[in-house]
Amino acid sequence: MEAMDLVRSFFIVAHFVGLAAIVGPFLMQLRWKGQYAFPVVFGGAITQLVTGLVLVGLAEMRDVDIDYAKITVKLVIAIIIFVAALLGYLKQRKTEGGGGRELLPFFHAAGGLALVNMALAVFW
Ligand code: HEM
Image 1 (cartoon, rainbow, N blue to C red):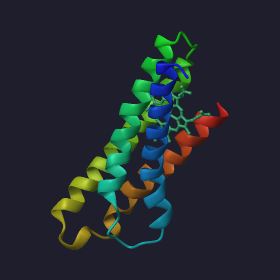
Image 2 (image 1 turned 45 degrees about the vertical axis):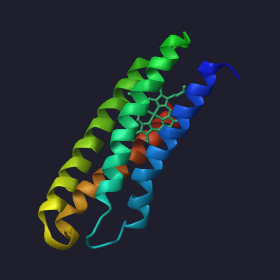
Image 3 (image 1 turned 90 degrees about the vertical axis):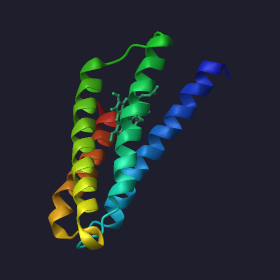
Image 4 (image 1 turned 120 degrees about the horizontal axis):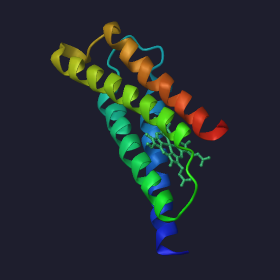
């Protein structure tokens, strides 16, 4: 395996870990009334932006054709996920006891849109 392939594989694994960090807590806490794992989800959102952009750079370096329409849509969705996770994370830090139902929209937006991005990555 060439060094470049190894680096790409590393970032794809990291891309999947970031995905899991958003979707995992979402599925596990889908029906919880509070105490959502925003620090994990927020970490996942950052990971997806960073690893996604690195993967685009690596594809360019390998002269692989990139579908920029698809990448742009995924990037916009990932930014919305990032903002939802950041807002939830910041609001949670201001609340005693991990916050309650008022944080649910942020949590569901981040998790639901991660599922959308996953489907886009595979079907488009
Ligand atoms: C929550 C956000 C995201 C999720 C859930 C997600 C999910 C995925 C999945 C499941 C794959 C594997 C698809 C396959 O190999 O068939 C993938 C690949 C990829 N993603 Fe994402 N992604 C996200 C964000 C991003 C962002 C923001 C970018 C870039 C701006 C990006 C760029 C890429 C690229 C370039 C690949 C292909 C890597 C390669 O095969 O070399 N992703 N993504």
